[in-house]
Amino acid sequence: MGAVAHPLPPRTLPALRRALLTWFRAHRRTLPWREAPSLYKTVVSEFMLQQTQVKTVLPYFARWQERFPDFAALAAAPENEVVKQWEGLGYYSRARNLHKLARAVAAMPAPPRTAAAWQELPGIGPYTAAAIASIACGDRVACVDGNVARVLARLSADTTAFASGSDLVKHFRPLAAAVLEAEHPGEWNEAMMELGALVCTPRAPTCIVCPLREHCATAEPEAASAIPRLERPKTERLHVVRLWCVRDGRLLLHRAAAGSRRLAALHELPAAADLGLDDATVQRGELLLRRSRSITRYRIEESIHRAPTDIAARVGAEKQNSAAGAALHWVSLAELESITLSGPHRRWVRELLAHP
Ligand code: SF4
Picture 1 (tube, rainbow, N blue to C red):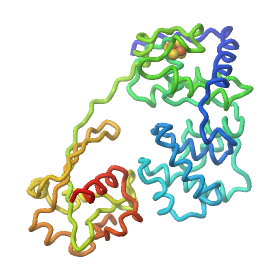
Picture 2 (spheres, rainbow, N blue to C red):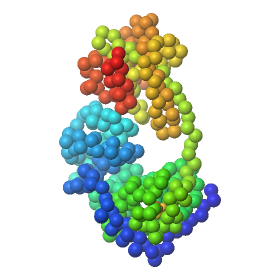
Picture 3 (tube, protein in one colour):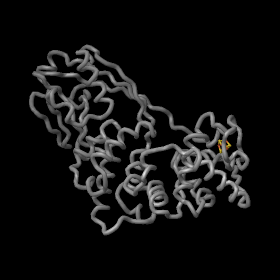
Picture 4 (cartoon, rainbow, N blue to C red):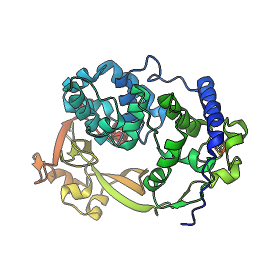
C-alpha cells in the first residue's frame, strides 16, 4: 500500500473553508435543482447524478419535474411509467429505487431530517444520505464521493494505492468530516464537489486558478494527476451477437425478467442465447450493425444480424416465456415508442428502421 498521509494542519482549516465557500458563491453553476431548491429536487438530482454527467441529466430532470413534481405525484405513478421517463439514462435500478423511496416518504408524517434516518430508506447509501440531509436539511455531515475523495487526496498529498473506488471513498471519510464547514454543511459539500468537477478534475487540474492552492500539499497539475492512486481492474472484452427480425410489421424483442438486477422489464434486441441459438447460427445472417460500448469494466462489442431465412421462419412464432419470466415479444413497429427500451437499443432500433 505504501501510504504517506499528510493530514491538513488544523490551524489552516478556517482559511481553507473561507476560501472555498467564497469561490463557490462566485463560481457555482446555475443548475435547475439549485434554483428554488426543495428536498424533492435534491433527492431527484442526487439519484440522477449517480454515475451520470450533469449535462446528460439536465433534460431528464426538466421532464421529470414536469411529470412528477413532488413525492406524492411520483409515489402515485405506475412503475412502468417511472421507468419509461428514465429511458436512456441507464442504471435503471435508480429509477425503481427512487420510486420506492417516494412511496416510503409519501407514507411518512414528515420526511427524515438526518443522514442516519435517510440511510434507512430504500436505495439510499451513505453518500446519498449525506448529500440529501446536508443540502436539504442542514445536517452537519460530510459527503464523500469520487470528486471529494480526489480533492482531499490531493490537498493532503496522500499517495495511498486503492484497490477500488469504494476503498478510496471510505479512506477519506474521516478527513472529510474533519474539514467540514459546520455552519453551512450543505453548501460546503456542494462546494467540494463543484471544485472536483470544475477545477480539481481527474486529468489536467487547473491548480493555477484553484482557490485552495495555497492550502494544497500537491498544487501542481502533473503531480496532482497521479493522485489518487487507483488500481484499475483489467478491462474484460465481451462479444454479443443479436438478431434483427421483423415480420408482418412487428419486431422481435426480448424483455428481461422483472427480477433482473440491471435491466428488469426493459426491452432489448434478442441475443442469440435468448433464442436458444449459438452465435454462429445468428452470424449466418447479414451483418447490419456493429457497435462497441463500455459498461463498468466490460468492453462490449455488439453485432446485430438480420435473421437468417430459416431462423426467421421459426423463431418467436408465439410469445415465449422462460422459467425466469423473461420473454420474447413481437412488438408492432407503430408501438415501439410506447415501450421501454434500454438507451443503446433505442438508438440501434431507430438506426436500423431508418435504413432497413
Ligand atoms: Fe486540486 Fe490543484 Fe487545487 Fe490542489 S491546487 S486542490 S491539486 S486543483
